[in-house]
Image (cartoon, rainbow, N blue to C red; front, side, top):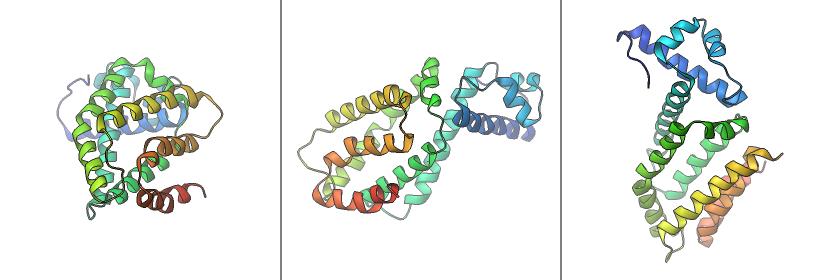
Length: 211
């Protein structure tokens, strides 16, 4: 948990800078390879100052990921604010993910598993958004993109399992993460699409990411 320094503009700005810089380093090198000294050095602050705000590395990892998740949400909402088309929303979501994963060191996904509180955060975040995901799926069915007669809970359980398998097994193999994400999308999303949904998905997203 972040410590509570004096509530000043400088401290708040420094806290945000620490989390932003740490996240960039974690993405580039993996979490295990990044030391607290390196984060402090890159920001031009002392390690003591860093530890006055975050008492340990797991706090930095957890809070940097929380900040990134919230930033990504705002980015997505800004891009879909003028549409209620499910395939438009799905396309923008995966475009953001494709862009992010191109800059990610595969070690990052393996290193995350060393931090129980981080795993708990991801599980909690997944559960909190389950109702929102269901509403998206239901609307996609109404718009003719997803097949009817499918049980949402089974779909999400299988998708979660596939995601876990890919990011525990395949990140250690010599495949580009972008290609792994594309295959995951085919298994988890394209497989439940109607012909209309498949045609739209292939045209707006899959073909673009094959270039």
